[in-house]
Amino acid sequence: MTLSLVVVDDQASVREALAVMLDLADGISVVATATNGAEAVEAVERHGPDVVLMDLHMPVMDGVEATERIKAARPSAQVVVLTTFDDDESILAALEAGASGYLTKEADRAKIEQAVRGAGAGQVVLAPEVQRRLLSLATRRSRPAAEPEFGLTTREREILGLIGEGLRNPEIAGRLFISEATVKTHINNLFAKAGFHSRADAVRYALSAAEPGGYRRPD
Image 1: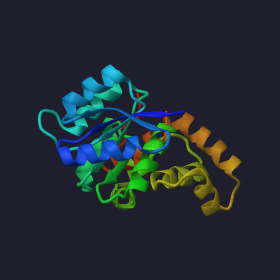
Image 2: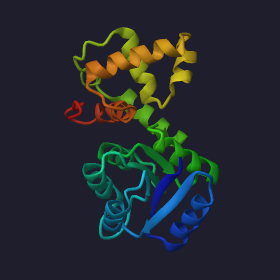
Image 3: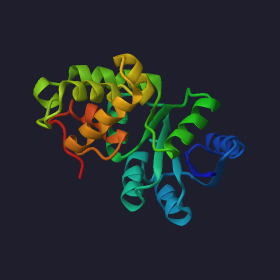
Image 4: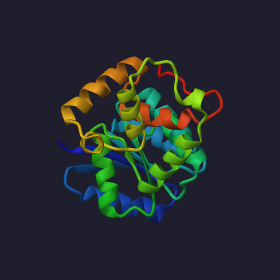
């Protein structure tokens, strides 16, 4: 299956280089490029891509607002942020807007391709430095906000924390010395209790719980 991709960046040299590089990758087809968030929304409406590679800080409309609009109009489209910024505010804003991946422009070709493929497969893809930011936020959050009354078991809370760190199921199984099937069972249970629809919801929980007002259950 070929993943259709829209590349969004206000710098022509970066946008064109990314488009050429990714269009040459096996299983990825760049169907459009955009120079700002407004053009990105239009491109998604016109082409219906599987994944959008999104810059954050752009004129006319920034990447956060564009992500919100894209996810509202086409929830199946996955947005991967590719930006020079790795500050808490930018990460939190992008993930809360609905992005399922966040990379910095230090990422090499292989990592960008991997992120696009991962997002297309429904995975959350976070750069290592972004994971460190997420962990820092999670450890700073207040205890009451960090533990909403979902009725989770101790093991479910433990797994939720590891999902927030960006670990995949095999990594969680290895960390906890349990089978991957057991991990999947716990994840299904905690998602049902917490109202999570995807792993992206779990990652956003780890960030939003650190904010004033705490966690908001997904709609």
